[in-house]
Image (tube, rainbow, N blue to C red; front, side):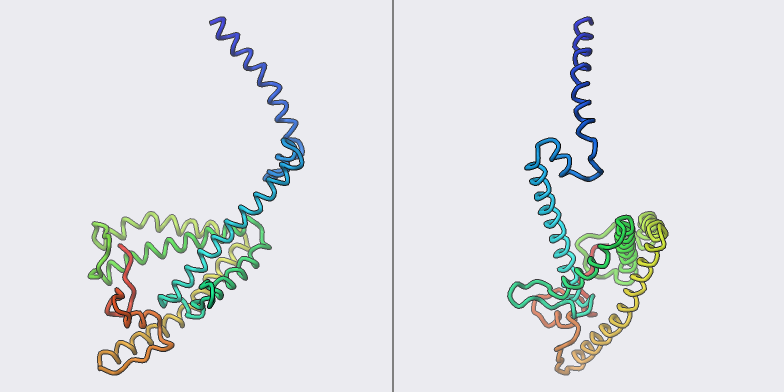
Length: 254
């Protein structure tokens, strides 16, 4: 016991100078300033190196997220779930030019806001997207139970609705909390939601009318000209394309 007590006392004494050194280094370092910490520890060259590496890594994360969301919007346009305006690709590189421009404009508008507001807006629409997915799962189970699915939850329509009730309620709660965090968050969340509804409703009506007209012409034996029609309708003309008879793309598992 005496030997062990001596070792513990020696360890405590050796940690005191190290703790003092850390306290000295932490003076003048603000939250998030990794470059300042690196400069105090390793000198000017280490601070510059950390700054450069942080800049490149943040740019990589930003670029990957930007392109991911842009290609998602491109895919929605090609599937008929978004205006075809966003489906244009660069003739050489194949990148979704218009989708990228829209994303950059939105990011530029949000960049000048407070970080807490940006987080509230982001969490609001993330929760809204999840809530729509849960609602769509119940809707598809109720209205289109005959559609082939790669996976099906072993519950009836009522059981599936009760099963998804808790996560759906959590999403609604997150939306309420984030939107009511501040006046700016409330204005941005509500205005963006209303803008999306105002844009989607007439677009969806036009898309349905185009698909219905193409289905009617095909059923009557009339040659269908799908130039400028919904991409969903044109997909049915491609051999081997798995599109349901009513003009909708294959449904996700419910």
